[in-house]
Amino acid sequence: MKRIFLAASLWAWILCQPLEAQNGEIKNQLKSFTPGALWKDNNGVHINAHGGGILYEKGTYYWFGEHKTEGKGGNVAQVGVHCYSSTDLYNWTDQGIALSVSNDPTSDIVKGCILERPKVIYNRKTEKYVMWFHLEPKGKGYGGALVGIAQADKVTGPYTFIRSTRATPQSWPVNVLDLHKRPVPEKYRAERANLNPTEHPDSVNTLGRDFEKGQHSRDMTLFVDDDGKAYHICSSESNSVIHIAELTDDYLDFTGKWVRAFVGRRMEAPAIFKKNGLYYFMGSGCTGWRPNEARSAVAPSIWGPWTELGNPCVDADKETTYRSQSTYFLPVAGKKDAIIYMGDRWTPENAIDGRYIWLPVEFKDGKFILHWYDEWDLSVFD
Image (cartoon, rainbow, N blue to C red; front, side):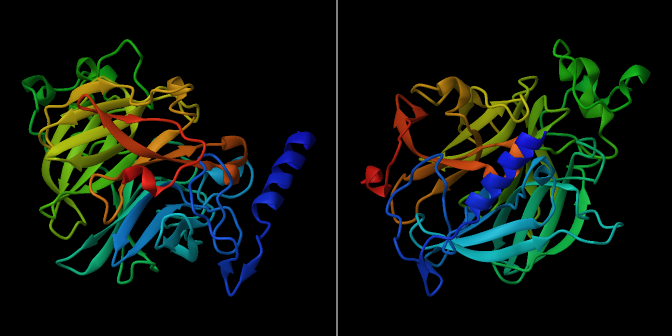
C-alpha cells in the first residue's frame, strides 16, 4: 500500500508542475493533439475535465468536465465541475470551477457524492446556460441513478444547482409495449444495480418497475438538434437500455416524450452527432472502468429506428476503443463535417491522472470510423 501511495503522490506532483508561462499563457503553444499524453492548460497543469462535453459560443470553446483529485478517493466529487476555454482547441485556459460541490450534508451535491459526465447547453429563449449531469447520492454507490440540473447566467458560471430527479417519471415511452403496463411481479419490484446477464429487461419489466419514481439515468449526454430541441440520452433500466428523451423549451425538465433504444444491449457512455440529416450514436459495453469494444449506430431520426454499425475503431487496440470510453462528439466550427471524438482513458487507482483521447471522425461506406493517431491536427479535415 505504501508503494501505491507514493506512486499516486508522485503523479499528482508531476501533473501539477507548471510549464514555463508568461502572463498566464503557456510560452510554447500547442499546435497539435497527442492522444493519451499529459495535456497542460495555460497554468501548466494537466487539464482536469473528465467525462466532459464542450459548448461553442462566439469563437470560443468551453470544456466542462469532472474535476478529479488524487488517488481512488478522486473518483467521487471532491470539488465539482471544472471549466476551460479555448479558441483553437489545442490550448486551454483555466476558467475555474463552474459548479462547486456543497459542504451542506443535506444537499444532493454534497462533497463526496458521485457527479459524472456534465454537459452544458445554451438556451436561446431564456438566455441561460443549463448543465445536466449524472448524480449519485453520497455513500449510496450507484443506486440513485439520478440526473442533476444546474443553471447559470454566464457560460463559465457559477452554476446554481436546481434539483435532482429520476428520468421521465410517470410517463411511458413512445414505443411502450402492453407488457410494460402489467403489474410487476413481486420478486422484481426491488431495484437491483444490475440485471443477471441472462435476463432481458422486458422479462423483468424494468420499465414498469420504475414508472412511478422515474427511470434510471446513469451515463448520459445532451444533444441539441438543428431546430433547437434538446434531448437527454442516458443508460437506463439497470444499464440494459438507452433512453432518449425530449427536454422542455427551457431545457430544465422532460416533456414526457421519449423512446427506448438498443433494448437489452447493455450499453453506457452514450455520445451522439448529426451529419447530412442522419443521427450517429456511439457507446460502450458495461465493464466499469475497464475499456471495451465500442458500438456505433445510425438512424434517420433521433427517435430511431437505430441500425447498429459495429465497432468504429479500426486499428490496433480497437478491442478497447484505444483504451478509452466515449464521452462526446465535438463539431469543429468553420469546418464542414469536421467532428472530433472525445474519449476518456480512466485511471481509477489515481483519478487525477485520467487522460484524454481525441481523434478525428472519418467516414467510409456509410459508417463513421476512428483511426488511431499518435499526433494529429485540424488540417486532417481540410
